[in-house]
Image 1 (tube, helix red, strand yellow):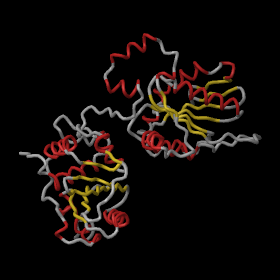
Image 2: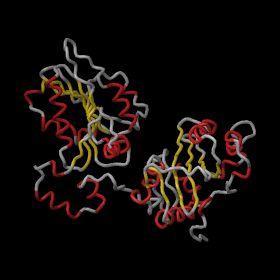
Image 3: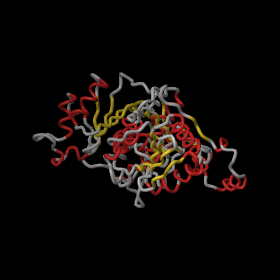
Image 4: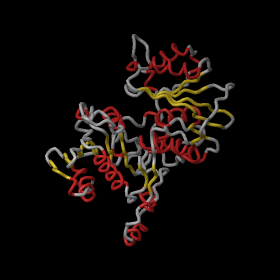
Length: 399
């Protein structure tokens, strides 16, 4: 992965690398992936045509977007088209030696996994040494899989040996005109940090719900559980995913050290995951008030909280579930006040989906949570809202 600032030459370097591979391995096949065909035609294809020596190109089929070289190798411009094909069935059956994923921050993690399955499936007849399956990714800083799976492990020194990561800055590209660079002095701070300085610590959200959250202040690696204190569990019940956060609140400390986010699962499996994680601990339970309603009955006559009580072997005194949920407006004020002013509020760095919600979930114009932009988000934000409202609603006076 080659990731960071815009203008560093990521696209030219990566496409040039693919052309070299096509030349070194006659008869090889490579795919260049971007979000859509119009985007490919506007960006990657012109860059390729500018770079590739014309004498090396035998033909260019613009209907199928296949470039065939004089040595029989091919490069295919291949749009992701995720929203038209969410199961990515068009990747099934692809025979290729490798991929260049352009602007990985725009591409689904699911697409990367498909590319892993297909890279190396093209066997070149008669060639003793086949090219190694290769995936090249270019990207700008973004709070998605490129950050979680590559950039952050690189910074922490835990990146797999099978992945090479090169950080990009504008200084890598000496051909940028001076007038262009001078004109960048007037861009806004967020654009400058992401696209010019290549910073991965800036989140570009137009209307953040938790506008006071500060990763540097709040996120801590390796929080420890105090075995003498109860573990508080805060649940949010969704068909997919079902979620819970676990923390402790004592001596003016707030510690959130574990998140649970189970896809295609149920409350029984979530309770089992909690038991496996914590063993025989004393729990106090809160969460979505709707879990107590008759409409929340999920098996026989049991609702979610009755199942939690049964599965975790709890007494009724271990539940602090409100009769109705706090208003989004009031819980937003409380959450932001704690993020900004509480002197000892920490979240473990392993709670990546919770941190992502706190950084990226947006508010509507009326102050509600915007759940329309990304259906997989905001559920852990709900868990922390319920947690703070149950155990820390006296932090400020809300009327």
